[in-house]
Each structure stands twice: as structure tokens, then as C-alpha cells.
Amino acid sequence: MIRKAVYPASLDPIHYGHIDVALRAANIFDEVIVAVYSRPKKNVLFSVEERMQLARICFVDHERISVAAYDGLTVKFAQSVGAMALIRGLRVFGDFEFEFRMGMANKKLAADVETVAILADEKYMHISSSTVREIAELGGDVSQMVPSHVHHALKLRFGAREG
Image (tube, rainbow, N blue to C red; front, side, top):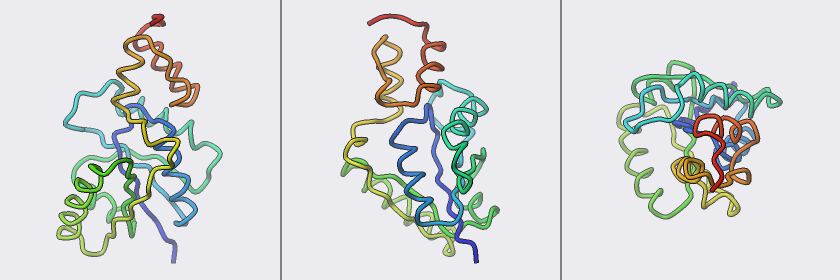
């Protein structure tokens, strides 16, 4: 039996924290699908196609990690691809409360899909997509938070301003 997991996220943009969680999930599961939600409630900087492409480049050398877009309930997507688990990354204590409630709701919707939380590596705990976007928009250096191709995409989106 192939153990498949879905790692859902908006990835706007993908950063080293996301990449770390996906790689560590791939050490637990046979296959990890990084699932890019196509319609997040928040305003997004990059289209779903751009977010998927940025993510695909990150995992090009990892054959057990794929990238897909999805719409609708995350657990329904997980079931549709035969996943047994949802991967969630936890950075700070506040993440736990949110993810706990979401995990309980998902369990009610799909009892066959588990939620697996992976604690963020200490060196990535401070990184969030919103922080990356804000720093990049103000001309700050995010090169230590995102891969070079994502950094380049941010520079193109915001212009190569100097802070």
C-alpha cells in the first residue's frame, strides 16, 4: 500500500519553511502532493499557476513530491487522490489552536483522512508568506527566506526597489 499525503497551502509565495515541511513529510510518506489552494480567502500576490510553477521548481529533484492545484474542501481533494493524511506545518503556539480545530472539523468530514502536524524547524519558525511578501514589497532582502527563483519572482512583481 502506498502511503500518500497531501500538504495543502496557498504558497503565496512558497518559502523555505514550506519546503522543509514537504521534504520532511516525504521522509514519512511514499508520496506527498503539495496542494496549492486555488481560491484562498486572502488576496494573493501570485496566480495559482504562478504559485504552482514556483513550487514545482522547488521540488524538481524530489520524485516523491508532486504539485497540484485544488478547489473546494481539502479533505475531499485528499480523498480524490487516495491520500491517507493531510500534512500541516506548525510554527508558533497559535498555529496549534487553529490546526487543532481544523483537524477536528476535517475528521468529521472525512474520518479516513488523518491530520499529521510537522513542527517547523527552528531556523524557519519566523518565516511566513505574509512576512515574505511585506518585506519584499518594501524592498527588503528575502533571499534567506525563499529560493532564488522565488526571490527573483518577487523582485519582478514589486520592482527591484532598494529599501
